[in-house]
Amino acid sequence: MSDFPRDVMSQWPAIEELALTRSRGLPIHELLRQARAQSYDAKRDTLKLLVQADSLDKSQAESLRTCVAKACYQVLGFQPQLEVVTSATASAPVKVHVEVAGARELATSTSAGAAAPAFLLPNRIPAGMDFGHFVVGPSNQLACAAAIAVAENPGRSYNPLFIHGGVGLGKTHLLNAIARKLLQGQPRIRMISCEEFVNMFVAALKSGNLESMRHELRDSDALLIDDIHFLAGKEQTQEEFFHTFNHLYQQGKQIVLTSDSLPRDIPNLEDRLISRFHWGLAVKVEPPCTETRMAIVRKKSEMRDVALPDDVVAFLAENIVTNVRELEGAVVQLAGLAKMTGRPVTLQLAHEALRHLVKSRPAPARIAADDIIELVCEHYNVRMNDLLSQRRTKNLAFPRHVAMYLSKELTQLTLTEIGQFFGGRDHSTVLHAINKIKSIRLKDPELRGELERFELQLRRPLG
Image 1: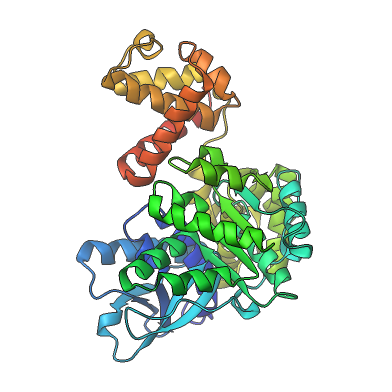
Image 2: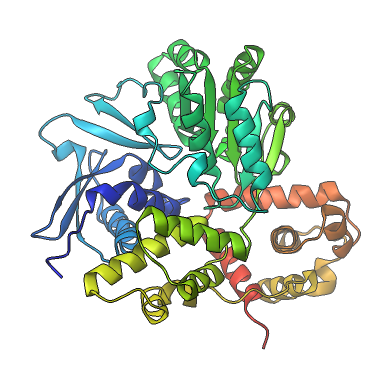
């Protein structure tokens, strides 16, 4: 085991990406965003993680260790010991490692007023994040075609381009691919996450450098922002982004945004922003079909020079169905286990290596609105007749909103059809209920857990 070459540092970008996905919505998410792997001691099997904070309490440190350890296991196939240190204990200025929509920016941090990251450079885009390594299928064909058109004709084809879809389906890959292509002809590309935009705005307000921030963003040839749905409910930041959007659009500069949902489905987003986000083209990235997932597995294995038999490719594609990022993690984990044990990659090895992934995914089942309503009524101890009535008491309104939200997420029903299920309500009432639950879900981990448990129960195989 100790002879196995554990190239941990080169795999940190993949580990970081998985850890950030796992921590989304948790208090440690922002700490992870501004953390970096400082070193790996092979003899002690210890990874040193540097966090930009004055101090960490026991709970934060433990949460960081758990989150990063699980990501390490998924990428590397083993869990190194984790030593978490803070910037306050470092003896010299450190480089702050920040994920910027999948790219990595480096900035020297010596004070709270450190400058914002410079324009994007090609070497800050992760290897493989280009159009050539993006596997195209029916689920993402339109989104990929639109991304290529924007990259080849910025500011002309579709402006803005709004790419939306679930976690781990390739939105960030397309954003990076667009940036890489744009950099061939335009040097001033700004690619940031929405959270970073919010943080920049807040810092500029505190320091009185708002004009400086505006110039930095508005001097861009193109602005690419990941996870724009994090603007939800942030009124002042929405105001600032509105004017930045207008300035760039009027100058013919390309704007590309990604989100987990359509503009109109982002809760507490101003109507004028919703309208502008629809000025160009909004395209959805759907979960890939089985054939596309198989193609993705083959592509990821080729990139890592790992030969996978056809039955192993099929096994991975059939059992990891909703997240492309987890498919890649499964390939890495399987390859790592094969190298560590000296065993060939077989279907049996795949079962052993990925047992935790396969077990956690119940087989898909057909979900009906009636099943959702029945489960919600049972959980919240309300009668079905009352839930579907016109009564608006608090003990009925919240379960009704939850049931409407789940109906939109887990069935193919339209807003109007959902309204008919719930006592003949109109689509605007249903949309209000869905947006209310989305807004609470962003802030309330307890509700997030409830919604996830509902989904698991509803997707449980029949019988």
